[in-house]
Amino acid sequence: MQRPVKLILFAGIALVLFYFVNETFFSDENYIKPLLKEREDKDLSFRSRANTPFTEEGRRSFKNLIYYEPNLDYRIHAKIEELPKQDTLLMTLTNGSYEPYLRYALANFEIEGQPQRLTLYKKLSEDKEELFVPFTDKTNGFETYGGGRYMDVPFKDDAKSIVLDFNRAYSPFCAYNPEYVCPVPPKDNRLTIAIPAGEKTYEVKE
Image 1 (cartoon, rainbow, N blue to C red):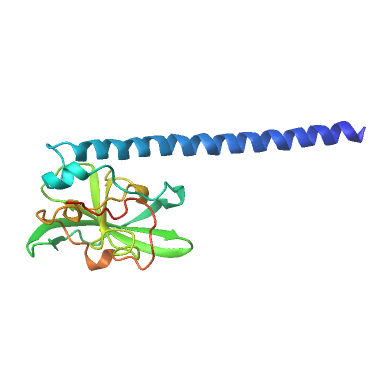
Image 2: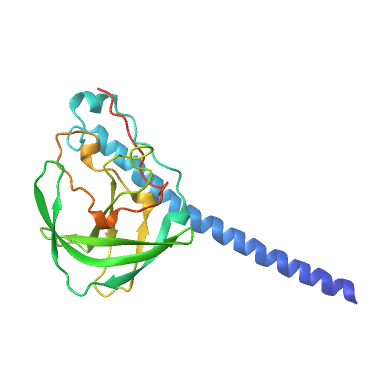
């Protein structure tokens, strides 16, 4: 009588494992496929004269941007911490001028057990349900653009949490062409760890 019970128990465990692996695979696939499509679309856009940030010579030699492999460990749910007062920061630009941004909120999260914090900004000249997150990390100047990277993060005003998807971190246009003027990530967004996710350094070939 014990053998059928053991067989049923084994079959039950196997079924649970199958559904777990199956669900994990398809959830990963459902995330990664659109991400890779976004990257392909960006490459196509950069090859066109109308949308490219490159000089004409740079555009002709451009094939594709370089990225880290997608990693769900760097798609992070962060807790929103409201600021006592949403003040305006004159963010420094690469040409030495300034552009006003609203210091909207703080995002608190952990990476590899280490607590991290980023300030979320909102561009005053735009009315999108989106926050701007310029940041630096320990990959800058080695594997990623030395001046830092950006994220554009969808957000609703009543949300208590936010998804920071570092797989979608991108380099500013001034990484490809010094004629562009770009925001410099503020001091409060200088992470002390490496974020090996998102866009890597692209060496422009003239």
